[in-house]
Length: 313
Image (cartoon, rainbow, N blue to C red):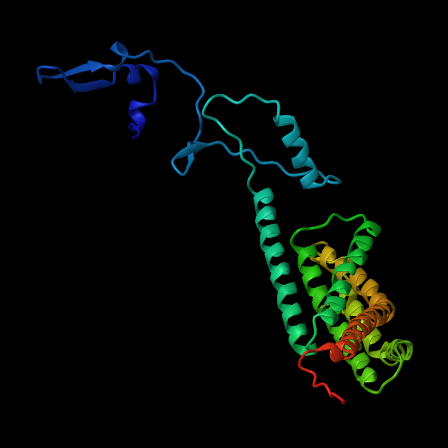
C-alpha cells in the first residue's frame, strides 16, 4: 500500500493520518496516527527484494584488472569466516561462483560419461579390454600437456572453456591411438616380432597421426590468439574481442594434442610391447602348469584301480 502524493508530502500530513478500527464493543472509532505511533524521519531501504519469501540483500563486485575472480572470492570467504552474523541471517555466494560450480559438476559428469562410452566402444571394436586401457591411459596422460600450456601462458584452469577443450582433446587423442593400435594388430597377424611391430607401426603411422595434430593445431591458433582477416577493410586483425573467451580452450587443445602426439608415437607402442610380453609370459606360465598337471596324471594312471591288470601264472 502507498499513500497519495499529497498525503505523504509532509510530516504533519502523515501525523494527522486517520486510522479507523473497531473496539471491543464493535464500535467503529478513528484516531490520528500521532496518538498511537511516533513519526520521525529516518533512512530506509529503497526497495525490498525477496527470494523464496525471504528478504535478501545482494552485494555485487567486479574483480579489478590483474586479479583473478576466484582468488578474490576465496579471500572474501576467508575474511567472513570470523564474522558473527545476527540470528536468522546467513550468507550465500551466488552469481559467477555458483555458475562455475554448476558448470564444473556438469562438465565432470559429461567427461566421465564420455570416457565410459569411448571405453565401451573400444572394447567392442578391438574385442579386448587391455588395448582400450592403453588408449585411455594416453588420454589421461595427455592432460599433462594441458597443464603445461596453462602454466606457460600463466592462465587459470577455466572450468567451462578449458573443460570443453579437455573433452574435445580426448576425442582426437582416441582417434590417433585407434589408427596406431589397429595397424599394430594387423602387423601382429603377420607373425612379426613385437619390436618390429612397434618400430614399423610408428614409422608407417607417423604421417597420418602428425598431420591430424598439425592441422588441428594450426586451425586453433587463429581462434586462440585472435588472428583474423577483416573482409570489409581487407586487412589482418590481431587480438579480436573473442580471443580471450576462446584462448583457454585453444591452449588446452593445442598443448594437450602436441603432448599426446608424442605419447601416441612413442609411449603407446612401448605400452603395447610391454602388455603383449606380459600377456605372453602369463599364458606360458599357466600353459606350463597345465601341461605339468596332465603329465602327473598320466604317471599316476598305473595305480588307478580302474586300470586293467594282466595276471600271469
